[in-house]
Image 1: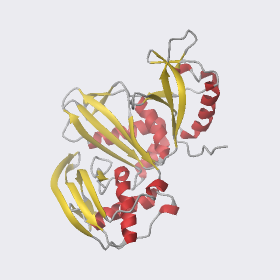
Image 2: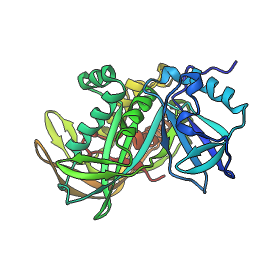
Image 3: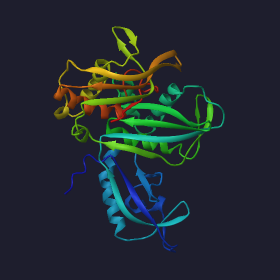
Image 4: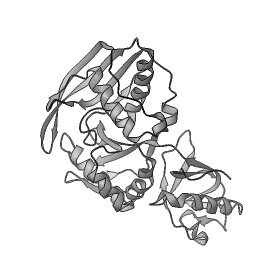
Length: 333
């Protein structure tokens, strides 16, 4: 039998069909199996409609999957958002790392930075699904998530959430589902949270450990980035500061098989286009670097490890305050 212990979530693929008098509302489809998930709509991709049955605890997904498979044998149409569908397939989520995008529409102007408010909202959502896990993360120095936001227009803001452990996905989505398609307060401003979410990307530590080696790596800093160095704040993203930051987080969360020993980086910066920006947080103004920087490697083993960490940066962030909107970065390779 297939191992289901690493199951982090499920989604169902829906195909439009003609109205049927025996169709069942999707919300009631699993009642006979004593499962009552929240049905969370994903943004359509290439015209395909998908929904996620979300539970607050991922331990319940293996029996949920079995119940869905049993229910599929009846081949009964379901009703979802006043449309009729047949369920054409099941997708399973087994990765460790996830990037999620939400869209909010503020009714009035938000403050220039909303990092603290998004941070509070994240913990509120997580606690709704698993209060013990939320409390545990509050006590950790190194946390398995990052948060960032950026305006897409004056009336639409993207929130990006990345997770470094799959155990966070289910309780977080459970909490988010309580506000989807409704109003919520962000920094005291009433906002509308769009009904659908996007899972931008997902991967595993094993897959990241197999990325092709690059001898030249360009990183793009999309939000202000800074580092703590000898009790001072360092703005320039030197190779050592950047890759030591990533290495520390990688070794904390990756399985032991894929962890790396400490490295004395021998390589150098070959080009950059950076500027200093100020980010106004609740505790005061934070300075950070934004732009791009190119690192060159001649040591093959260091190039291999740096290539892995550069791809990891999309999920892990770089430097300080990555849960407050800073350090949002990704590889341009």
